[in-house]
Length: 333
Ligand code: BYC
Image (cartoon, rainbow, N blue to C red; front, side):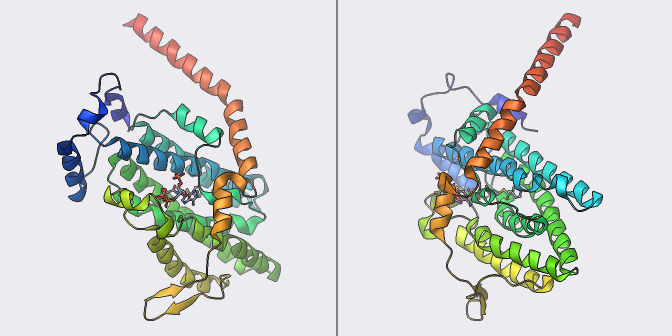
């Protein structure tokens, strides 16, 4: 799907950056974006555009594979065989999203090894939300409903991102995320039809995840240092604050149907704005978590590093087999 990466000229063959980034090329590039065209891997692009995309797409890929961990912990404890099968499929989907996204980032000339090394060393970011624990079975449903729900809200506009491979990868990711969101909601509906203890468990999970999901959309627009340029380049189509508001507006009626209370005393419909007003988000806590000091940052990273080390022999074996096949293929030809 992403073999175009192979046709990217290598650095040695490319003319010096300064002469390449001439006004003419920049103007042609920007006009294509302004006309809602797509930039493809073999097209000329400013170095800063390429770097921004590698940063965002690799962070996104890391979020998918770190995002497998909180739910993955519940596979062995799922309350029924059916619930276990659904959860395994969902966690596997997230791994698949990571693969599409690493592949999309590779078309920009960044290798998967480099991207994973940045994750493992703690240099690269991934979504803040995955540094919180999934404490009970209701958390698994709430992650589907709210975390995947927030993810879709943020990712639907990325299907129109100016960079072709990212936009195309997002189409499939969004279809699968929508399914995840619905299965999470369905699982919560089941619990809400159960005993008082089950209802309390759902409410407790919603109380713990709600504010963290609102922070997933990123800092307020006034503090979002990448937004203006990302919007100009057609990477971001809707701002952090506008997406957050859309998510809240869409989620309040879902919470009413479910029968849970969203933990915000300031949450109320504002007729004049045509939106729900909501209370202040704890941005100090968000930045603490983003900067490595959330409840589970160290544990999540250690788990990924261990998985990578323990899987090294599989990668080595696959490479040895590929080399052997290439060699035998050559002899046969
Ligand atoms: N967590 O200038 P801003 C999923 C960082 S996967 C951590 O607004 P930008 C799922 C930001 O990186 C969900 N860091 O940045 C998976 C920047 O720092 P750097 C992941 C965050 O890029 C499995 C700084 O704050 N989705 O849902 O314009 C199971 C300033 O921010 C966060 C994506 O990755 C955060 N929440 O906007 C279930 C979507 N927010 O890089 C579910 C693609 C901000 O300068 N990414 N930061 O050091 C995006 O749309 C954008 O990158 C963001 C941030 C909206 C996240």
